[in-house]
Each structure stands twice: as C-alpha cells, then as structure tokens.
Image (cartoon, rainbow, N blue to C red; front, side, top):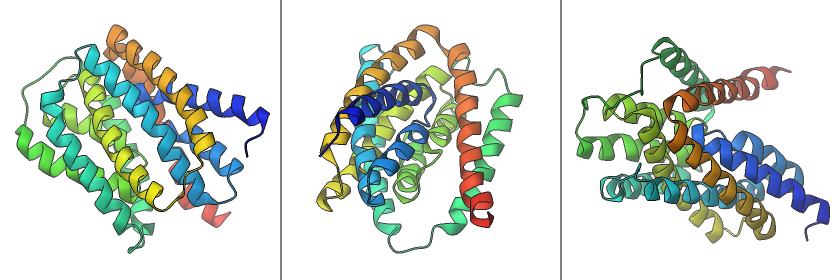
Length: 255
C-alpha cells in the first residue's frame, strides 16, 4: 500500500531527478535515498529505482531523437551491447566483491571533473573521431553497460566523456547518445529485477510519471541551450556523485 503523502513526494522527486538526469546524469542521488527510506527491503528500493529511472531515460531518449540530436541508426548497436553488458554486470555483481571498484570510482570521477574543468572548449563542437564506431560500440558501450549493471554510479559521466573523446561528439550530442545507452542498460537491469519480483510498482509508476515529465523538460533545455548550459550542470553532478561515493566508501565506513 502507498500513503497519500508519499504520492506527492515520489512524483516531485521523480520530476526533479528526471530533469537533472537528462542533462547531466546523477538523478539517482535524489531518487534512491527516498526509495530506501520508503522501502523496508533495499532490493525493492533498487528494483523500483530501475523502474522509475527507465521512464526518465526513455523519455529523454525519445525527445532527443525527435529533436534530431540522436540518430537511431547510429546508436542501435551500441544500445544492444549496453543492454547485454548490463545483463552480464548484474549477474556478475552477485558473484564478485565490488568493494575495490567502489573505492576506485570516486578517484576516476574526480579525475574526469578536473579534466573537463581544465578543458573549457571540450564538447563545444564536433571534432574528428579517434576511434571507429564499431570499436566504440563493442569496447566502450558494452564495457560501460557491464559497469552499470555491476555498480552504476558515474556511468553517464564516463559515457559522455567517452563520446566526446572517442567519437568527437559535442556535449549536447554526447548527452543525447548517453541517455540512449543508459536507457538500454536500465531496461536490462529492470528485466532482472522484474524476474526476481523486486519492484514496488505503485511507487515506481508514480515516480516514473514525474521522471517522464522532468526528462522531457531537461532534454528540451539541452537542445535549446546547448553546451554552455550543460557544462556547469555536468560538472556539478560529477562533483556531487564523487563526494557521495567518497562518503559512502571512505568516511561512512570509518564513522
């Protein structure tokens, strides 16, 4: 059962997270704490989070494609490989200890933030690609899909940077392609959570409705305002994700 006051909380959280996530990623910083507080079982919180996040990433992907920023023909193979990678990662996390990776990721995210901050021209325009699309899809899309299924935080950040550095995309185009792959990896994880019956549908659908609307608004902002708007939001979310992971993996465990 869901109480009346939870409806507004879930919808507004989804709305805000969808807006932020469609621009720079990191929406889980808002949604997961709320779900963990409402769900007695953490696995239900994680499964429900994947359900609501799928609404946001699908909405953003749809609106980026309709605006012409995303080319379905170019991204469909990468989406399939990200989907498969996420399935593999979700299965692997049950077999291996992710402790070392959890401690390494904040360092990598911090390095990304410094790199992007020191290169203000990065992502302003398209540049010549450094890797073929086929290699990118099989190496990067699959690997980061696997990472998303195995651990997850910062996946959007790593993907956006990979699109800019590897394929030479501007930041708006990189953001659009990132959401498409993120959508695929979300759906893969959601599929496994549904099979395990670890999804709170009422909460996920309410939050998902907010996600859909928030992602629609956020994707429109990306299209109309471009790199100068995305860049500060992107850097802010990278820093917040990094700080959250440092707290969880270094400070909290010693508190």
